[in-house]
Length: 232
Length: 259
Image (cartoon, rainbow over all chains, first blue to last red; front, side, top):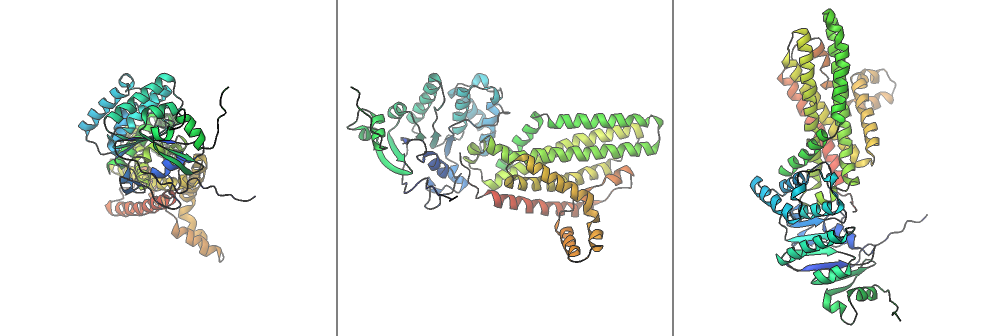
C-alpha cells in the first residue's frame, strides 16, 4: 500500500485587522480547522510561519492576548464553571480580586450565574458552549478565535452566542471565526475569507464577495465550484 | 510557577473528586484492622506482623494511586480534548508536563499522609510507642520513590496511547525493580559473559527504587536514618525525576495535536 501525503494548506496568506469580525469559510475538509490548529500552535507548519500580534505562534506568550473557543466544548467536567474560570484566570496571572471581578462579569454575560457552582458535567450543550465563551474571554482578549461557535446549538442557543459576538464586536474586539452558517456570517462579519482544498479562494468584504449574487451562500457555492441550478 | 501550580491544583481536585483514593484507603484500613484484631494477645511479634502488613498495604495502595492517577493525565486530556483550550492559553508543553507531575506528586503525598497518620494511630494505640521520627523518614523516602515513579509514568503516558498499557508496563517495571533491584548485582556476578556485563549495566543504569524502602526500620524500630542519607536520597530522586521529565518533554513538545 502506498503512503499518500495530503497537503492540508498551501500558500495561505491572511491578515486580520484589529477591531474587525472576520469569517473563515470553507466546505468540510477545506483546511479551516488546520489553519486554526497552526495559529494556536497545536500543529507546527511544515513550512512558512504563523504569527499572532507579530509573535511566532510557537511561543506561548503569543497566546497571552487571545481567547479560543473550540467547536465542541472540552472542559474538566468535575469542575464547576466558577472553578474552571478561576483556573484559567490563574494561568493568565490575574490577581485574586481581578479574577473575582472578571468571573462575576463573565458569568453574567453568558447568563450562567445561577449554575456557577454546579459541576459542568450537569450542563446542557448550550450552557457548556456559553461556559466555553466565558473561558475564552477570561483574559479580556484582543483577539477571539472561535471554531464554529454555534455548531450543534438550538436556535435560542445560537441567538445567545450571536448576541455575545455582536457585543464583543461593539466593544472593539477582533473576532476570527469559522462557520457554516452563511446567514450568521452575513449578519456579523465585516470581512470573510473562503478556503477550498487548502487554498485561499477569496477574501474581502462580505458585500464585495456577495456582489453579483443573490446572497453570500450563492457566492460561496460558486467560489467552491458548486453551481446551483435555478429553480423554475 | 503560577501556571504549574494551577495545573497541579486541577489534578489534586480530580483525585479527591474521584473514588479511587477512598476505595483504596477503606480497603487498606479494613484489612489492617482485621489483622489488628490479633493484637489482643499483646504479643510484640504480632504487632510487628501487623506493622509489616499495614506498611505493605500502604506501599501497594500508594503505588496504585500514583501510577493510575498519573497514567491517565495526558491521555485523558487528549481524549477528552481538554488539552486544546488549555494549550490555547499561554501554557508551554513543559509547564503542562511539570504541572501534571507536581499535581500527581502532591496528590499522592496527601494520600500518603492520610495512610501514615492512620498507621501511626493504629500502632501507637496498640503498642504505646510513637517513634514519629522514623515514620516521617519512611514516609518521606516513600514519597521520593513515588516522585521517580510518577515521572517515569508520565514519560510512559507520552509514548503509550492507552493508560492501561502505561499502567501495566510501569507497575511491572517498578515491582521488578523493588523485588530484584537489590539482588541484581550479585546475580550478575554469578552469570557468564556477556550476560554479566549486561546485567551489571542494567544495575548501574536503573533507578534504585528499593533504596527508598524503610519498612524494616519501622517494623524493627532500628532508629532513624539521619539527615545525610536522606539528603543523598533526595538528590538522587531529583536527578531521576529531571531525567524522566526532560525525556517526556522531548517526546511531547513536537507532537502534533489535531482537534
